[in-house]
Length: 318
View 1 (cartoon, rainbow, N blue to C red):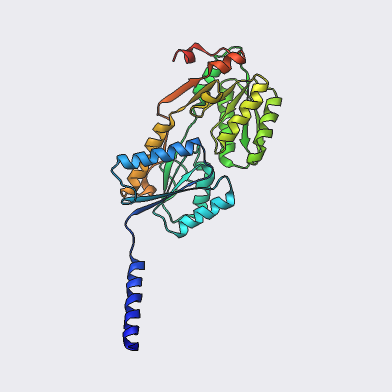
View 2 (view 1 turned 90 degrees about the horizontal axis):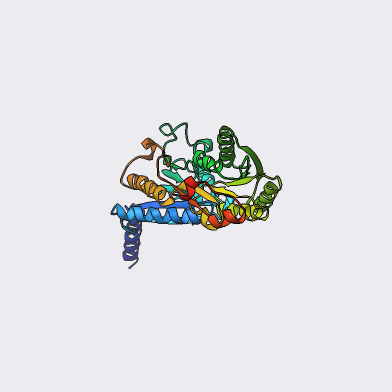
């Protein structure tokens, strides 16, 4: 009897070792967001639509696990470390803090990024074609040139604009500096107020409005669902217009919002992810951006009338 029991136990252990060593062929994707917002939800939805359109079946061809750090860097680090330790087949990063953390802590994992403006200041590479191995993605270029031209056509004339930015985030600093560069070319003065944490955004918005800019610019950032309401509330009290490069912001108060349709960006990014799932190496995939995608211009006549701003005919006739 003892001999039989030993034989059975050995058989079980052998079976277990075989099953543990067997690799599940389903492609494993970890999607990590720094902060959940309307953009991340749209991009996740478009990603799933794109995978379906490519004929990929969830649970059969791929497993997609999504998680959010809720704006907490220690949680973000833990999530990225977990993906690295699990040797996920693809780590998708939404927003700049997530890409930066993934570059630092998950070098051996294939990575795709989006929902940021400048991957290069985060250490992703030197150019679209010369970048880190195991990495590719799509970044966004806000149409500030086009927006500033529209601002210059408004009446009364606008000569100064204000912006808030996260001084502890290299990409946010880059966004602010890029805005300053383009504004100078358009003869617009820039007033900038920094913040270092999400709970400081409301105070930064109030401090900016107190400086007296003739308009406020809302840029895309991970905390945009907080930054826009804060900017709009402070600006409205002083009858200052808020312009945005974020999709649909005219619906909640921006007098003009000029942006790429986020569904089109999401679709293009989903197509890149499909290529990786189908075997393409991110190391040799050039970065892509939304520069050539169609721009959507929305405006809010009610808000403009309330603050006595006349919008240009080039906008209202679209």
